[in-house]
Length: 316
Picture (cartoon, rainbow, N blue to C red):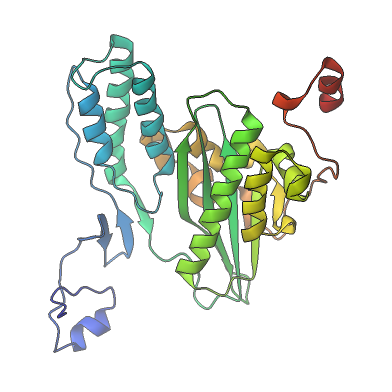
């Protein structure tokens, strides 16, 4: 196969190359995402059609235009997924007009979606000649959705530091009612799989991996053997333990958890200026990470507690 399209961000390479005609375009489309070679950053180009009245088909058509394979716009995509699930639960037909309140909510989302075109993300995720490379993954869940997000932290020998967003994944919560701890567990499984894939794709010499959750119940489950737990929990804990070690999992406060945005969704207008999403929690820029003791005893899922005394013990 003869390659016929070439582009690069190194001016010296482009100037000395005689065998290949490098494109001088300031922006090219790469796997559905736009890349600016000059500034070496990714951007998005979402074409929006505003309608006074919308159908479910219009909603799906707009959502399909948000192509984000890495999940860099995870909170925006998650909000779109949650909205579409709401339409399914209302049993609205493809050609039916949305109810007024739902239509106004959708119009607000679409209008803010145009801000996505102003977001630029640097392609390089590590500093030059890093001495330490750490992966930090966060998971979270709500009644609407659950998700995971991964960051790369790199440090040079002279102390220069960079924390950069790598990827995220989100899933809408099942329509069948379930407990938050079980959804948090599903988010932890999603994070374990995402970190595993990130390691395989990056092929970097990762020094340490830290996995963060704000669910003390899930963290206590991870520290137990799967056979000690009930089937639903045991199967997922076994998956987590195959890909990660219990020592990698730590507790993070909800206000410092960027995965909270993936589990609840966010408008692109807020996402553009959200420091917690793009750079992770502030404690990543230091060498001291939060430490909180995780209970050795297995904390039960509130949905499995049998009587009032169990609830009093759980919250005491």
